[in-house]
Length: 105
Image 1 (spheres, rainbow, N blue to C red):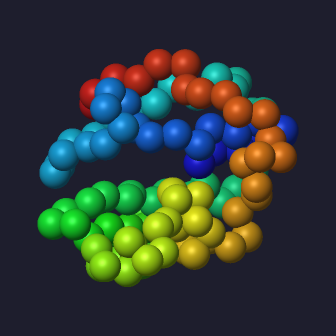
Image 2 (cartoon, helix red, strand yellow):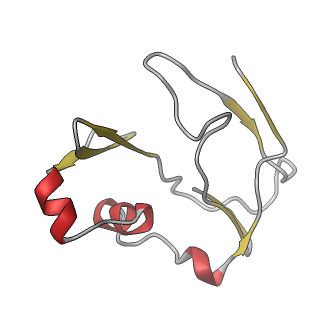
């Protein structure tokens, strides 16, 4: 999630919304250098495996939700973000935008 002034980028990574092991992408953001970037930046990877849901932050915190628990209490990506980053601004109060382009490093 990136925030600048009243705009937010809150989306999966290209090209498919997810990356494989040791893969990466670089994003070109629509804002010019020196504009009003807000920190901190929030980095979270959410993925599924064998019915479980996993999340890991760029800072190394992680959590697992079991398949049965998810059936009783499904989680959205935004809810998972809030568990790790409760101070995160509400994307609904910001204007959604997207990256300009992406490429593999």
